[in-house]
Image (cartoon, rainbow, N blue to C red; front, side, top):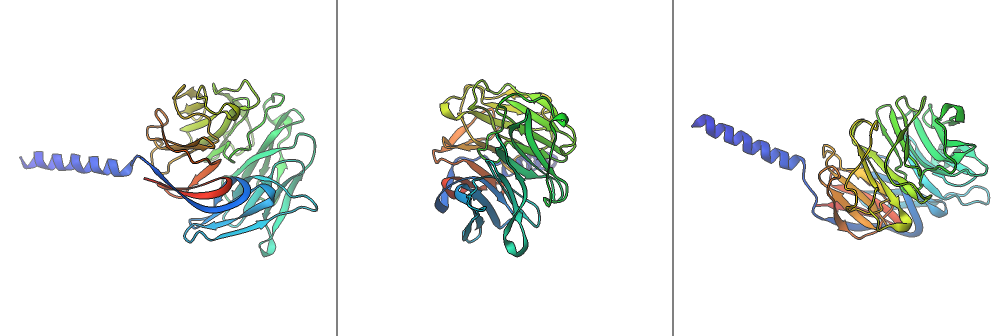
Length: 343
């Protein structure tokens, strides 16, 4: 009898621990943090207390997530006011990358001012996203120029950047690019990187951008407004991508894909089911790959079973989000940044 009672207690405790370890979200509370006239599609946490952002009209700044105090500034370049769609960070520096020619990549310099560390001009130049593996290696991606996707790399913590030559990349497709929608069409895990494109293809490197290959996916990509808008990897094997067509935002056909083998194969998931078009998807931390949140101007959706089934938590529109912990995220969109508390 004692053994039976003991086993029962172990099972009950294990069950409770499992429930506590993988809570599912039923709702989200949206608290405005910052409001302005700019569009913000790129945010990143510099540390556990500071959220950095950059957006249109040269606007960039930080949010103290404990006090919600905002520090904002405007970056100009000669007579130009850059529009930023990509940001990144190392332990010591913040980076922001403007979109159109001249593409300007800034990092924090002496005295806290931003300084240009990479510049590119020319027809078709348009940069979309960036990220860092660590304090040494970083990557940014832009649309096709001269027959291949634009990929730039740094190997010295962002001090200098170099462009990968076309003969070191897979054959491009005319007009192929990456959407500058949420700074999340690049995903990294260990030394690996995946880049999702408008053609529904994924550029993959297992060695921090030294060599590349192509992974084809079944996501919809017949029109220029279709393709992969956002991608996230929970680990080096489990990845999820979402997109669709922002001009047909109610469609949920062929707009969600999943891989469990590091991108060797991609399969449609929840096809023909919610959610519809989204511009950003992120795995919920500490969810063992089961929790996913997808957002866009169409609202906020959540899956607690790895993307098989979804529920809409809010109609609040945003472009991008990043998790602070496993129940709190910050999102940015048109004219605002907000705190999202998932319950």
